[in-house]
Picture 1 (cartoon, rainbow, N blue to C red):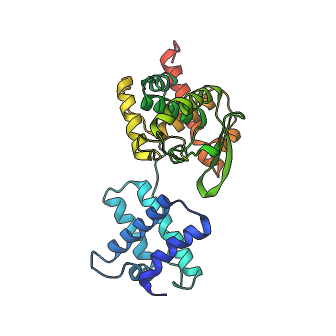
Picture 2: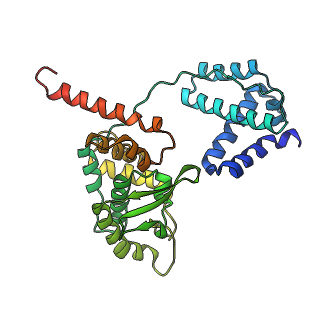
Picture 3: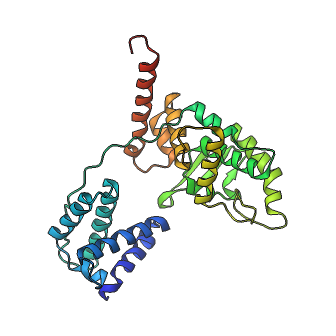
Length: 301
């Protein structure tokens, strides 16, 4: 294999071996290409060749330099992950010996807690769309579904008709890594889905057909970017001090369940996390919220 094919071959291996999502594969490719450009000091040379000939010291320097330039620690951590996985694959395939990415230094990551959206703010956002219009009814239904299920935004906009089973009150979700899970929808969201499917969706489609649950006026599935815009639009209408993102409603779903006594293992299954440690950050959010309430309302807070 020629050196200029290494990055492409690695990205294809991620798809074939792990069924990694397109966005994740693109992120790995961007990080590797950026790493190669920085290691070559801007010279116009083959990017894969640069990576193939890199050593441990140059990789450590690269990650440290990215931090010194002000790159976010999480971005640097992602690049480190891309380098480690690339070299593990290249070493296993016999393209690089030895593996220079073993024990790469890791940037220190601050523990950033998710934006904690209160139940009152969620309620205000849910009430913001004008449900007398087709788009307003669609948006209200999307908000209700997202808050009721805790889906990732990609899972929500990618939802198809055969994935929702309203009679059983369940949605069958295929998440990261192709992992499948069943998620309860909840009575309130079911009512809105039934109304949207019978009233708004037929008007949006007209004579056209679509498999996506949530569609645009052009009979195509709503994109993540478009849904992000709709949330910002309605959050402004609701007068929220801080504008949420689609992921904020997923966070709200998790923290509000914990605040009302949900089990962490059950929450892990609902969110589709492969590792419980990913779910545990919500315990910190819930604890921080309780401390703030105590400080605000207790006479000796």
